[in-house]
Structures are given as structure tokens and as C-alpha cells.
Length: 436
Ligand code: AMP
Ligand code: MG
Image (cartoon, rainbow, N blue to C red; front, side, top):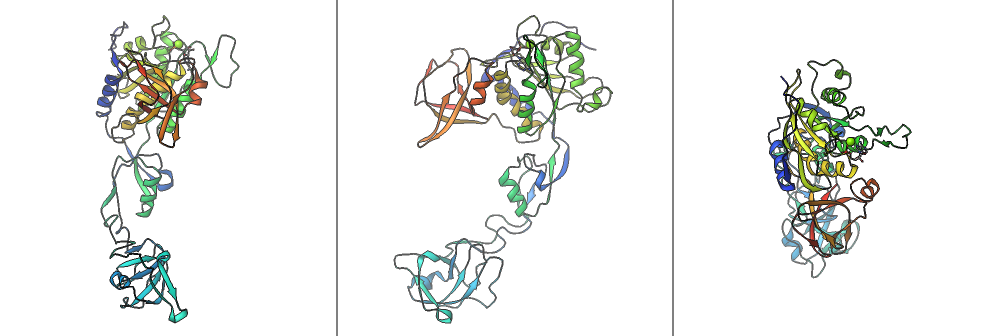
């Protein structure tokens, strides 16, 4: 039974409360399905299982320098050491243990010969003789200690020990480590499907010529890009007009996880997350909340005291017609608001739905380059540019015409976060930035 259409109870919260609500819901999200992918396909995916070292890392005592393997004590005595031979990476010294008063030339990455306990850098020795008479000694003033320039076997990881935990986002460092451990295939979580539904009578597609009163639907493409970058599988829906019945039908269709399943209603897998844009403000044709309510939605918040992005809505549709319950965000139609609210709220929930560790938005700190006015009642999250200055990162606001100014947003590379209650932020203040 669907509840009768009516007005949604307003629940406008502070920015911090909104973040808390999103993270609390993120903590309730179940474990996604697991699949196996080749290591080359694993970047951007979330590990579903631990990766263990398949042997000690490093697998032998490894020289970190080009130089000479020695007994530290002998080398420190300052006497000439006869060069007994050479060992390069990929080879082993097989002529027996290092004798006192001997050195063995060694290359970076080669196994340290038995009996040697240190490597002296090439740059730290003097040479004499040639061929079988070749000898080296430590340059005066240079030191060598036992263990110097050697990474002992197993010191990075013991064979069998976990090196990557389930929930790890596979970045380049993780991929390289998995490769070092022989993980040619990896168990990862299935990528969630994210339905994207833009609403508005004024919208035409990117490939169409807009009439004088029309604009292009840029939000669907912007969100598609954001979902891709955040590791989800975007499913762009056709634009829907500002009519109750059209909206209801489009929302029901957008719940299906693939376009073919949208016509065959029952039993199809539901999208894992729904993003709607537009139609969440106070206007007469802002019908999204009302239609969602008619479909039995619960609302966690219906607005956030922030700028831009104030009308953002977060909720969940119940299990319906064989499709599982699904979280949704009603994002404001103004394109900068759409992208800011994605970065603030959607990304964190999407991380959880992807099976990654629960984490808030990617905040960092930087020195403000110019003076900005705060808003007593709103957290401002403004398009800004982060640059690396000699003393550290500096952030400057981008000049913008408001939350529709996509050109300004495209010139930005982060958002400056200006908390409510502060009247004025001055040049030199350290402020929070939201990375993107
Ligand atoms: P709304 O939230 O529907 O009141 O829309 C707010 C503003 O955002 C209006 O100027 C809309 O024309 C614009 N807008 C809404 N949806 C989109 C979209 N998909 N792409 C670009 N602009 C949009
Ligand atoms: Mg609209």
C-alpha cells in the first residue's frame, strides 16, 4: 500500500548534521556481491578479500645501493679490502661466504652474499689496483654500520601475512603491491549501479538544438562523470518532465539496474542508488519530494543549511514491486549545487555501497589567499583553486555568478569550506577545502 500523496515533513539540518546522517546510513549498508577481476582491471575497485604476501618481502636480504657488500667491522677498520667478484640483481653469489678483508661488488636489488652484513655505497669508497688485485676501502670520514643499506628478508611483509585488507580501494600503490605478491586476479566487490534522472521541462539533450527558452541537460552528464570517477556504474535515464505521473513512472523505471529490465517490471535487480536532479526547491513545479513520498519514501533530511546546495534531499524508497529498498538523493538542479552536494554527501554513501571503509568527504586544509565573507546561518562550499605555494597549499576562491555558474566551477579544482557562524575569513587563515 502506498501512502496518499501529501506534503513532506520538512527536516532541514546543519551541514555537520547532514554529514552525520549520511555516514550513519552508510554504516548500515550491506556487503556487496563479490566478483573476480584481472589485476589490470582492478584499479578503482574495492577489495573483497585480503591479499597476502605469497612469500617473504623482500624474499632475500636485498641491497638498496650500488656498492660493496662488506663486514661492517672490517670496513670500519679502514684497511684495503680485496674485491672478490660481483653480484648483480637477479643473480646469487655462489663462491662461498665473504672472507674477512674481502668485499664483493653489489648492485641495487641484488641478494647480499652470505657473511656480509652491510653495503657501502659506491660513492663512499676509494679504489686501488685492477683485475684480481682490485681493492677498495672506506673513504675517510665515512661510516658503515651492520645492516647498513640492506633491507632484511621478510622485513616488509612475512610470507602469508595480509598486506591488503578487504575494503581497500585499489589505487596504483595497491595494484603494484598485489602484483609483487603474485595476485594475477583479485576478488573485488561488484560495482553498484547508480541511476541518474534529471527532471525539468526546460531540458534538452546534449545532441539537440535547444529552443530559446530551453537549456541542455548538463547535470546528467556531470553526474555520470562523477559516478564514474567515484567507482560506480552510472545509468543515465531519459529526462523527465515536471508532471506528477511522468515523474512517478520515471522513478519506478529508474529503480531497475539495467535499461532492458525497466520495461519488465518484476523481479529485476534494483539500482543500488538513485540520483535525481532538479525539482526539489519550493516552486510549484518542484514535485520530486511529493512524488517520492507518494511512493512510500522515508526522508532523512529535506534540506541542508549550506550554500550552494540548500534544497538537497536524502532518503530511501522502500521495497516495492519485487525491487529492494534503495537510497536516493534529490540533488538541486543548479549545476554547481548538483556537483557540490555530490561531493559532500553522495560520494560517502557510494563508498559504502561499493564496499569501501566508511569515510567522510575528502577534506584537507589550506591557507586562504584572499578575504571572504561568511554567512552566519549557512556553511558555504564555494568553487576555489588550490595551488602549491612554497610554504604549502594555498586556496583562492574562483569568481562566480552563483550556483548556476558552470564555467566558474570548471575553473575551480576544489571547494573552499566556510563554516556557518564565522563572519569573515581573512587572507592567511587556514581553512578546510573539499578536494575533488
Ligand atoms: P530546479 O532545482 O529544478 O528548480 O532547477 C534550478 C535551476 O537549475 C534552474 O535554472 C534549472 O534550469 C537548472 N537545471 C535543472 N536541471 C538541470 C540540468 N539537468 N542541467 C542543467 N541545469 C539544470
Ligand atoms: Mg526544475
